[in-house]
Image (cartoon, rainbow, N blue to C red):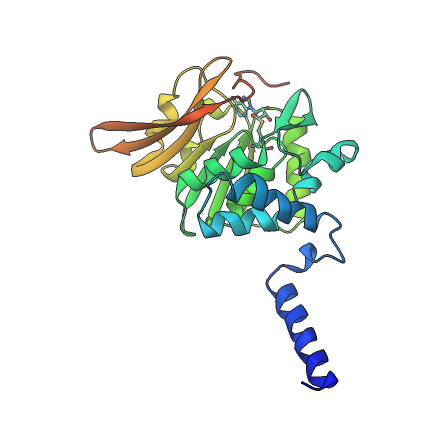
Amino acid sequence: MSRLARRVLHSVCLLSLSAALPTETTAQTDPYLQLRLRMVEEQIERRGVRRHSVVEAMKQVPRHMFMPEAYREDAYADGPQPIGDGQTISQPYIVALMTELLELDGDEKVLEIGTGSGYQAAVLSLLARDVYTIEIRAKLAETARLTLEELGYDNIHYRVGDGYAGWVEEAPFDAIIVTAAPVEVPQTLVDQLKIGARMVVPVGRYFQDLQVITRTEDGVQTEFAGGVRFVPMITDGD
Ligand code: SAH
């Protein structure tokens, strides 16, 4: 092969690599890209998350942008991280697992309880038609909205309030994800699921069972997806 042909081939390869990723996540503009790709491979795929769309979304969303600057270095570490107000951004694997359990195909209307940093909402926004997210702490909600809007996620709808009430005006939902832990499954949220739709929710006081609840014609069907640890779901913000 001539040098020119080799060079052309090389640049085609580079082009197709960068074309597969949105501009904000190319190596030149995102110093964390390599760390993120490694996080997805080592923490997420290796632990068994297989759904292609979920893996791709986890590769794309710049997790570090959802954390206070002081903690960004740790954004791709294998654990939850502080986001202020005593709250945390969930461990990457748990975000991927809960998202996979929702079984989204791209056309859903999803409700998230506990916007927190906005990271989970960003992942969902790439996998569903519309994301409705509720946060009880006004300050966190505001920071998350600013981050998400700045990054261009434009199918997310925000509400400051108590997630126990759900979002009646927009119900029923195709999927609900609860990212703070209630002691019992909130019936109001079950009532806002379509028949056949599922809710992923960590249930318990200190340690929780991750439950996948499917609404049926005459009640619910519950599956257990392992032990997790989330901050408690509260009823009064600040
Ligand atoms: N999904 C978030 C992580 C959430 S941490 C992320 O990707 O970063 C849990 C969040 O739930 C916290 O921000 C907490 O303030 C919020 N929360 C707790 N109780 C709530 C309630 N009743 N309604 C809405 N949000 C609640």
